[in-house]
Image 1 (cartoon, one colour):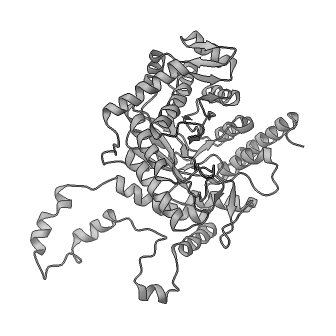
Image 2 (cartoon, one colour):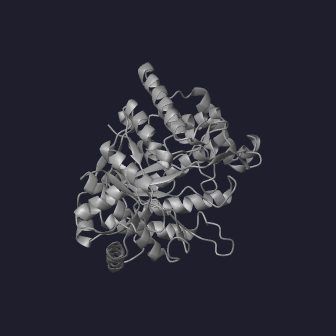
Image 3 (cartoon, helix red, strand yellow):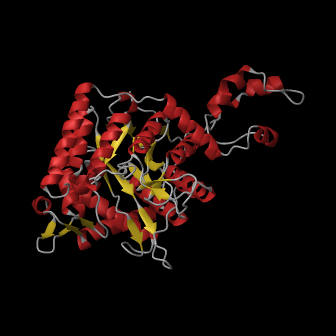
Length: 483
């Protein structure tokens, strides 16, 4: 069994020609072979050198011959399963699968003022419980909040991961800051699940020692990997051009893929795309821009040409509130990414940048994801859906379709009915209190928290979770990072 997600039945969007895709590919290979990457890990450099790479150990510069890159790409599985603790929530990535993931934010926001503040432990738990009850996301982001009030900073990710394991049986992902993946992968194992691991690079064209250590550990545990979340800023840590940023981001991801396949041939890999324009007037990153969507479309088209699963983050906006700008920027990014062929799209819950998030936004995003999923699944064209016999039966006026069995059968299949959108007429809307979509989302959140109980861990699993968290605290104490 596996979580359904959505199946793309429409042709993916193409914004550049096949000749331009080939040019991007050759340019990416040229950067790998001529410019190379900085790899701050002695063992990885030695591994690369022993497999035909060119390595300068003094500068930590590694260059990747094209034949080695192509060989390692060929070892990547094109279809694979990722295991959740509930088999019904397993995810199967293939060429046309579409799953939505949770985004992240440093703080929760106050719904009255929209100002950020640290979440409480209960608010963190409530967020995960609400997420567990929704159709989307099907994949939980690596934070999704950065801990809670009163929690030591160094324990934010492991404690948060434990809360996710305990309160959802969906697919998990982990970051690797301060080697937290050591403990997060073990906690996922305790629950009988896998976690997606992202050995994140540092732009431009660099993998730090911690990221490579994470890669080695993930390979040893046969964890699925996600490469390419470089967080490049166009004009600052990558070229100002979208095409140039696709090249640098892709070269960075390919370098990670080569190392991963050399360490463990056949390891499961998806490729992320994460880049932003820089506001040259203020120096700030621009979130939710149409240029970011152009990047996603070109990035997805390129990596689909290599038959690799694609992962995008489309949840961040420049809006500070749950408002029109937030909805517009999220919807535009997410729809374009889905149309362009992305397989995992992390959108749910985030508001501004990587700084704010709220479960009410996540509930609104659930409807957005379901609507976009409905679109990419397309329409059925069969004898039954063409309905020629019915059309002949009903004929012109005064014919009517409302009372027909065909209508009763098909209207719910053809229509997605959102749970938070207001579709009332004006008189009924006024009579029912003039509620907004945010009001409906708040009501739904309260209903979920009052009625939904996530599948619990067993007592022995709970004991193992506490043991691993204890090991994490001791690990950070010895490093002088926790008092």
